[in-house]
Image (cartoon, rainbow, N blue to C red):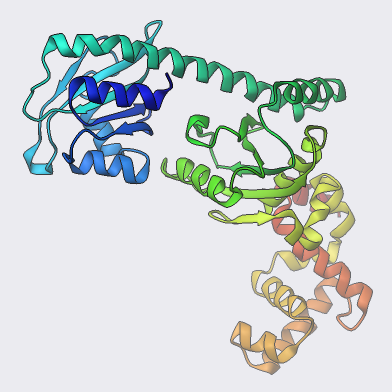
Length: 372
């Protein structure tokens, strides 16, 4: 009996609509018994999770520590019906909650007690899934190791386990501060781990990359943190995950908050994969470009001019300045950088410096500036 079957069985046994949610109030399964519904149940089913307000309201009744059924009274001001909460536990750990809409309190204590063994069964399954997910997460982390032997062993283990079939899209989701991502709420074929402060997802072709990424992003953003995402595909085998991850990391690094970047769209930013920040800074920055970067207006002018392939008219229109003002700024840029904007190599040097600089750490840039 799986979690959906358990939920349906409890709904039939207690003659009430049932909803199974995990500890974080994300929907796991649900079963209708009649057409009874309220905004809390509707929100959980439609959006696959309850709101933070609902979670806080329900947890005030002590459900996280309860070992037996807990009554949640109705709140008519919110159109919230009364319900019965059956904690889903295993080995004294709460893994979720099985909710029954029971506004008229027709479910007797004896009937609720009869359903508790099914909740124990659900707790066992959820605990088992948690352990399996943790084990797989460690294997995926080993694929990202700097040690080739560890990567080879992990690739062999995952292949033998048959948990997912390549090719993959490898995705990296980055947040400013570490935020947990519940892997239960992603397709079972998607492998996940948390490595070097990033969430790493291996998404097989059998799962929709766009849908999975949107789901993972939503789970993180609902905690009020911005997410930068990067992807690389195809990753043909477990043995190739390490390189795909490094490329997806670069794509995530280049993405703006709320954006997803694909490795194939990065252009010259792929250089971020080839060397560390300090080495790239030393290779692309000059004393002149360092001086230019201290002037925001001239830096924006130079970057816009070069991005528009030296088209003065389009540059002036984009910056909303007069053409003569643009020419004056270009002369100042040449004077500051000791580079000629009519020389192809000089233009390439300046364009590389300006394109890569926003993606290099300030420490690397400061070090190079001090050296000059």
